[in-house]
Image (spheres, one colour):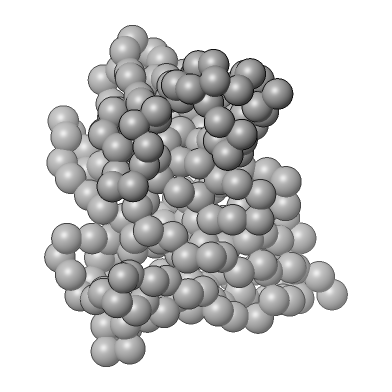
Length: 107
Length: 126
């Protein structure tokens, strides 16, 4: 099955732009979605189909996907955005595959 | 508003079968617009997809768990069930049920998990 690789951690200053990457073979040919998970809570979908935002997700969350890398970008990062973020894509064998997760710290 | 609630024993003995139920309220498991499935998260670790099911009973499983997993649906009760057999300590995790929205793109059926339950913790220990 495909593997999705994420950096274990990313740090950003409040108000700055955070980028979280997700890498996989020919990932740009697939659709990627992203989830936010705060401590003790269930994951929340923040991006699907590479760049679509579900209702209620702030515009500062955006997504892109090209080549072998998908990126979740958080503009004007707030303290409330501190969380774990997981990418997810389709795999011909597993159907649903998650990346290992990235801990976003807002310093 | 759609809500999913997981329930089941919090403690299971090694080699036994873990059984969980997800009760759906505010929506119907019989909808042809969605699949419904299970995801787990070991303590301090990432998410692992277990599998999903369509209201018709059609299932897909993670190959790494396929030999031990059964997912079923009871549309009359609006409940989704998970059975995981021959459990070991490595199966200790928070188990989530989630609605899988889907669409077709290229050669695949894509899912995104847009509604999640709060999760239930299952510990495997004697």
